[in-house]
Image (tube, rainbow, N blue to C red; front, side):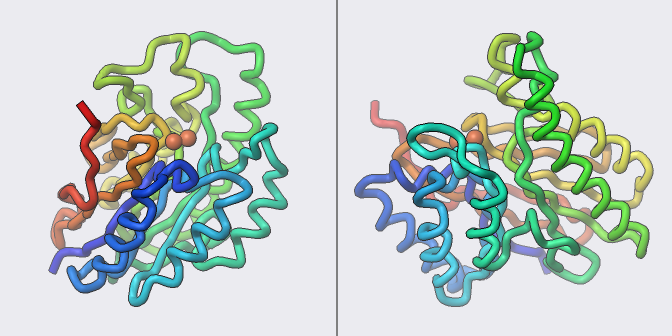
Length: 265
Ligand SMILES: [Fe+2]
Ligand SMILES: [Fe+2]
């Protein structure tokens, strides 16, 4: 039997307007369709609104949420908030993957782990802020590496990784093409990609699937035979989600549209 999960990224619920009610209504239908787990890969709302939004989603009957935060979730209207304080607030809502050391079991020998992640400034042109970005991003990368080593040290199991920023330039797209050198530093977490390649090569019998967002441009990149990166499309004002069915043998997912909004023409 396939493992079925719903996946939402970059819902930006603070900007959803009249579509917000439709989004929550659609989530409520998921369990009856066989999807009892919703993975959320950040940019849920803003620092002021992310906790109430998560609380509301967590109260959907028979639907377990598991989430990481994106850069917008740390932003107040006047600038970047205190990471520790915001993380402390959302950690009270289950399940904040960034703080879940062992992740969660999606199925026998299949585990979901996650860290928030950040763009690390290493792709494209070098920015003056690059050292700060590297520092923020690399802390999460180190945290994830440590967890993966521990989990896989106890035996092989397939891994799904939730994080906000795509870990490879090939998965960090703008209008279907890799981000240009000016924007690329803000849309990719290169250090995370390097670490994931290393771990994937070390564990060839384990299949790794990365779920990310941030760019709002869909991508599907096979970085290694056993490492695949999916990035979800998103639109401000149109919160949506995808449905993923993981093959019981390969443990790689098939993507299906869940809730989709079409751009007004
Ligand atoms: Fe976003
Ligand atoms: Fe983002």
